[in-house]
Image 1 (cartoon, rainbow, N blue to C red):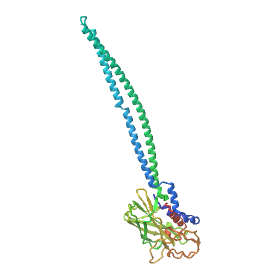
Image 2 (image 1 turned 180 degrees about the vertical axis):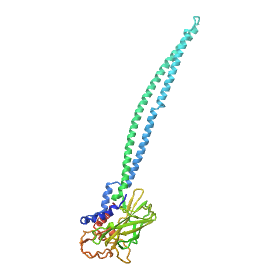
Image 3 (image 1 turned 45 degrees about the vertical axis):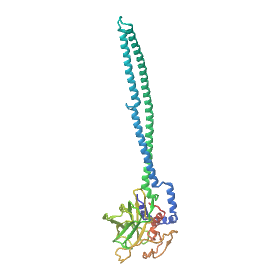
Length: 424
């Protein structure tokens, strides 16, 4: 996620259509940044709100998974051979069947005794055998009823188990649907949070201005001769009381010929190196250098910079923009509220400007009125720009950080976007 690249590339692209950009400058100048930011924050939830929503969705999903697991376990228990209702009923039925069999056998045995009595048996013996047979038959009848009741209890237990099974299946189905819905909610919340963290900085919605994250250039000459290279330093300082997990230094150089209308960006080049990467590297087309991870509260990091200008570059004007953006692990982000612009002159190859002062950041207030053309032999900016010798009409353009230098109408677009609080 990067905040600034489009700001820099807009400058180079815009110089090819200055009339169009000049015509829209007043509209950008009159924008109310606070109102724009408020409208966006009303329409979209913040990172913190999305994080809370994602946490709540995860908790709901975890609960749904637990409920589904419990429903599955309940169904398995009901269907198992150890179901309490079925086991108890079947055990009672088995006992009743065994008791009935014993009772039936007792009847058979008592009947055999009666049948085996001899003719010489006394009345007492006959009466005793008959009584025993009667009792055995009564016991057998009782055992039969008990067995019938036990068998009925088994049927009832199995029916009850079936009812429980149906209820458990229904509960499991509901739990599975709830888990699916909770997963969909969790996925949507996670995706919304990830998208907000990835893109939040691009529209300034969640990235905030932080003036205490400063970028300062030292050692950049106010005049650079074409065909030479100069080294200077970029210091990034975290002036806040909190550690920034990742700070991305930003640098962009823009240059034009003396007319201010023809870009010569392809003839100027920025390189960088640092303590962690001593080899010179070209600032890429996104204009960021390697991250400083982390940058503690009150700490600073120095980056060595090198500006190279091709010998074929014509005399003209240039400005080096620097800034810094930070990104924290919790999704918060931000950066310098303004790009800092360090102006310099480009002298023709072979020139000998002698000793020159260092380039300074611009301090002139931005021009928020209608941009008008002017005819002049010179265009002084902070007293640093020499006479151009040109008598053509040239726009006075407001640059980032309030500097004013004629380097193409695209710079107007850049500063207006910055002032409107847009983080592209």
